[in-house]
Image 1: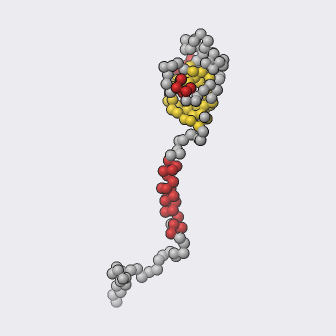
Image 2: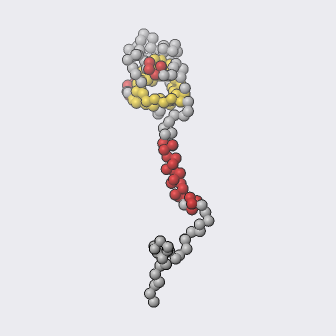
Length: 160
């Protein structure tokens, strides 16, 4: 015996004779949790992308060129342990000198900064006028460490 043709709907298109495989008691997106999660991710992604890599509220962050210096007369002046802030530098202190433009934007003497990959330091000294967007890490009297540090690009973060 030949199979019966599918019933024809009012639009002239054959309609299915089998019932829907899932009950329709739940609301639209609740029936498709994976689709709901995907939609939520698509809607939230642009908002979260703006937050990625941002410093916490009230903090500033800037990319600078970092150098290292020691307490040697040849690298500074006749008083190599006296910082521009008036503090006497001692080996082991985690002090930095900042360029004049960084002083102007809020990196004043006594400001604690976080240097990505190097930890917390404090602004105690000032670099010469020729420097821009630069910091100098004080490494005591360890000339080899200062030379091996060289010049690096680092992220600097501080609270306002």
